[in-house]
Amino acid sequence: MPRGRREDRSARDVLNGALIAGENDSPEQAHALGSLLSELNCHVNLIPLNPTGGYAGRPSDPAAVRRFIDILETYHVPATVRVRRGIDIDAGCGRAQGGGAAAARARRCRGRRLTC
Image (cartoon, rainbow, N blue to C red):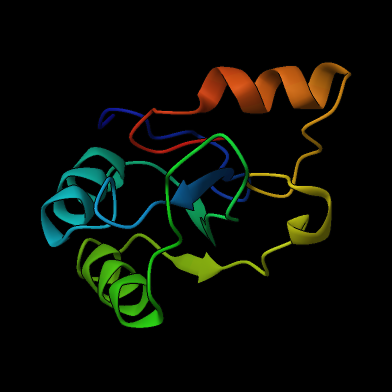
């Protein structure tokens, strides 16, 4: 059985990632992710990064997001752009920046190539 394939083809993993302009939204990053995920039964949700205080990262522009998705699709990896949420509460990818477990996870994932 190929790497990552499941016997139960109806179940698929959903991967969520924030796209950061100039950090992880390049065609090279899309090809690398597509190659990595091509054998998996998965779906990718891409979330343009929300601007937050204390982090200089910027959201990817719509053309870069569309290009990223188009590249993933050449690897037969379906992807969707998710609605950006949390802008009004300073949440990097829709997660609260205050206290609690979700905020702690959001802080830990900052700076990774595919965040959150």
